[in-house]
Length: 398
Image 1 (spheres, rainbow, N blue to C red):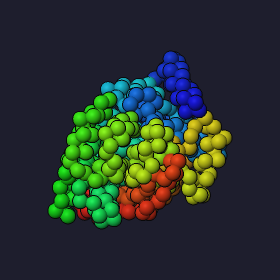
Image 2 (cartoon, rainbow, N blue to C red):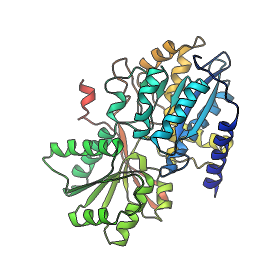
Image 3 (cartoon, rainbow, N blue to C red):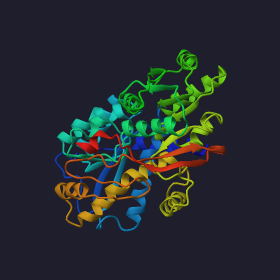
């Protein structure tokens, strides 16, 4: 019920914000002496609504910063918009935020297709975008001077996970079930790149559209392929349908997935307990950890957002904002777009609750490292491997 009340609250807040008279900020720098305007889109509704808490997590750390005096006296004014995981809607809300609200920078932003729909528009308008909540090569190669990637590329993550499957689990029959978009296809590419080094091939690879409800035929194909491990690169709703469908046909592979499905308490709940044992990448320190920053954020959430569950997706919103805040603080009081870009481009080994982040003017992909985690009883976290880089990452050799 708390999650439902939270969603209703945010939908009402978004609706009220959109209904208010809008003051045009066309041509404004995105800040003044009192505030810095930052925004994020995210699916508060729709098939990827569980990922909507990413945007709300960023709100947590911005409130913490503001209560500590802001950034050199400026408070962060933060805007959230629901794009329903729909690229057309993403374009609409981003255009409104840039042209009518005068946004200085975006943080996070769920969805590969959604991000691709606005990537060029943001660059053309010289709006900085830090930490897209998705990771595809097209975001950062060739380098986009206004976009700074934090999230490990899906190719890198899938490569590391596939290595774990082959070398640690000793499995040779692997299937791949993926969302038919840039997100899913990037994971498939990384998996195949790793398998090529072992002279192995997938026994089955199956695409799915994000909104498909009946996966009976796809799951039967996986079962008939003999796949002992199925790596899936899909959204939470699709993943839930997949594991439930397999349970009804008596198919019990070892499921492996992207960190996009690493909110174990959530996934274990919506799958009716079927998520236990699933292995995923981990992009942030587990939310049940005693890591000092995690403890700090959990306590802050009780104060600022008691209606929220401080889970993986919520904390991801914090994680994406951490290096942005660090860069803004390093700029000093004389804020400008150029100074902010320079601070971002000189970020080296910054680490909050995620992997170490480094950006240079020539490379805006911040990391290739993930943790490997497994869902334990009642949605708990089991750390299988700490931060693991992808030694096959081609972008590091450019």
